[in-house]
Length: 422
Image (cartoon, rainbow, N blue to C red):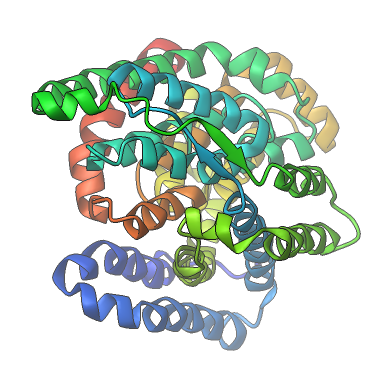
């Protein structure tokens, strides 16, 4: 915790990085592909220099880099492990089969996490839709599997896991968020079905007949990688000693990579380009977001948060562009400090009993709003990168927001606020 007061202008490097991610791929894609490491790391270095030589405190940066190591170890290992699992589905997709697939993905996200579910399911989802893949197919996968689906368990999404570590019971989320989760998932799936049906009906008769073809038999290869996946999921619950969790997760990834045959990797079009892009962009994000998170921490009490709706919108807005885990923690701590000043255990118990709706609002805001942008949650960029590797067209950062987030998610989130947090 810094004793120095953080000014809003120190958030400028983060804003520049966010703007660069949004604009440069549209203006000059070749330049961005070549120089995005320079932009991301360079802006991060500026923030590091400011903290070290002006504020004389490197601890916030070190804490954020520790979180980054945990983040990239988890997401990288899951990417490698799931890259060793090849799922082949029979036939080709119709609108109803896509709806069933995404609904299953929403459930699986609560067992292996949104990252694990995204990495396991995105490749078979792309393959079964390859004859008619559209950008909206990718976006709705991100909405459901990579974000909203994981709101029922601490394993589902990192913010909820941090709440579990703070003392929130493991099954609290499923008991208190299930009806909001069900409403959101059902609404998004209905919208997806309408859009997918419209595009399916516009296919030629021959293209529609492709969906009736049996094709190859369904088959799963590389199932032994479930063992490595289990190691990762168990390791997530290890907190001490430092870096043991990360070491076990990385070892599981290495074990999977070297024990998986090259044939399976080839069938999955597996390479390290997606994880390279995500790791470079997010190291800049994790460092440059430190001043923004510090400013929120220092001013959370002064933001005048009193009602559940205020926590919902503020946590959600910040989680759209900042890492949703520290954002969740900041606003959860703000709520704890607002309602009771005893020890942490007493705070958690009191707030869960007397102000349950506040914790619900913070939890839903952190998990759901991660779908608002590509950088709102780690799996989002991974899914985009994997899809582009297969030749699928994905919207730009700006198009994602203007054509999908604002038109589909924002009205839904307003309805959720009106029904549950108003």
